[in-house]
Image (cartoon, rainbow, N blue to C red; front, side, top):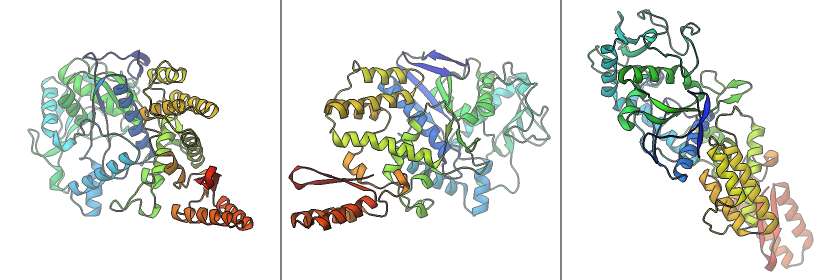
Length: 482
């Protein structure tokens, strides 16, 4: 049985869904004002693995991941660049989708935008006002009265007395209590017209937290089976979602709360606010100079799968450290699995869950989606395939890897593609595949002519460039990047 660590209960629990065999999962997505960084990649890949395993386990999954397309940061970016809000958000939505495709992240079933659900948000705000949990302030905003909602802080474990004003959100003078948060923001004269909506509270726009309460209920109903997001959303965003939804409708917003761990850089969480972030495309672009050029950006498929592997081989809740040497280690480890597939071609197989390695894989994934343990099972299968030469073992490794979104590329093409993260940092990246093929052909011709000195010279030249050769029967030479 699948057990999931529930942030709300602070314990692993068996998954129990509102409807047997069906999972309704909502994950908070991107605020689209800039390119996604590696911390975002961790969230995207982690919940992609979750939904893949749920489906592989036989659940009918409805996966919703929203897009925040109205926000202070988006407005600032539009004003700074002289573009309309829709131009800014469309550009970065397209960029996000390109990054997702590169990382093998499957599209959610629904990807709602905040601007499409303003009416639903206003309906919840009116309900909260009727329930005595929302009030209009003198500055035109509508705020949530935190102290009037019993149980505020149950997700994060924060007590009202310990909370400090100004955490993540600015404190407005019109609030009754500094802990209250905004539900509806009165429009400012200098804000673009497309950032404003008419409402019973005057012209304005929704606060950040209310959008997810509206979209999750509109698309999935209540309660959600799983609600997930990044580590920084536990408080205040998810805490405020609970207060809004349960304050308006009663009951429970979500049965299980999941939060992936942070991606760290020098002991700090990777984030745009700290300026220590590296974007996905800076990390995996075929041409680093074109990383930010959306029309010409192309991902390096070997590096993209390396980045996915780097994320997947760690448990989603663990703290993960970003460093170039860690990417190098991930590249070398993934290469070893592909080398097994090249040496022992995979036979098409149905997954035999009675095989010890398949059992270990399933047990790991059923233990709170422990993809680290699942990856360990792949390496056990690689060792078995290399020892025995069994195509069934390598086939099972490939099939199980597919459940994690890994090991689906052609092994020869994968091993012949370049990567800046290959061992030693050189690894033939300066030689194109056509150049390597030409040198291999020249070496073969030199051997035919019994010019062994020239053949050895060409072999040494290829080795210096990080190209490994393997001479096969019949005069065939296979090559791969080291």
